[in-house]
Length: 313
Image 1 (cartoon, rainbow, N blue to C red):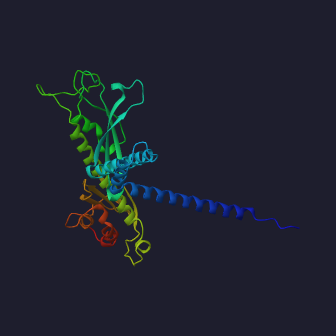
Image 2: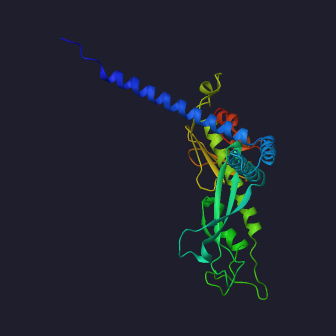
Image 3: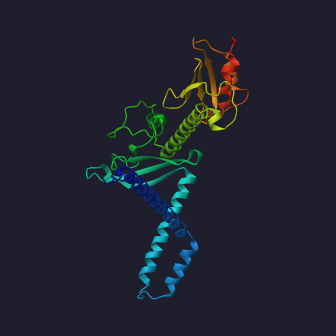
């Protein structure tokens, strides 16, 4: 009787080969993109193309190819300039258009791009503004769409920096002091939003770094002997989406509440036991004598249960 071939193993090998080929294609595509960007970014390339274009007549069969190459190089240089501005300025504007035929102001939209680079990892937030009444209030802007996190508190910032003029459709009913008219400050709004976003990102990133630090035992992460508190942390979490507070719970029942500033530094700390009684010594240990960032509390958090064992404070 003929032996039946093992089809499952053959399918597995084929799947592995397909996955390997896809990985190689992805790597080659990335390398192609990198080399293309690098080559087109050389300014000497543009000067040589320009020089060659001036030396040949417009009817030459290479004229169209040179013109197309120059357009490609110029497009890359504009893109490089735009990315440089975005990286250095942190907030840039751009023009956009609403495709809705019934959009106000003929679909004209002002976009604000806010770039945040925490720990080298870029994150972009976008805010789109339009003019609801371009004839009655040509300089009055209102936020149309945005991708900002709720923790920024956009409504409060809009009420402060971008009040809509009274008497115009879409204005908020806000009391104003007699004889004083609030003016819109778009630049101030963008600066305030970026400060809020940066502060929120610093706090969230610091808490995430702390979580990664204390929830993984030192034996696995560093390969060295640890104390009794190396794996005693049960969880680390944020009770609110703004990231202004972090809580740490140990397996023994201790709970620490940390108040965090916008720069990721611990502003206040309270440690309580399983019965809700405050442990002052634990609070002092976590706070230390100098300003401490949340991400650097790992060693103190691991040491705290051992320091409080058998002590009543």
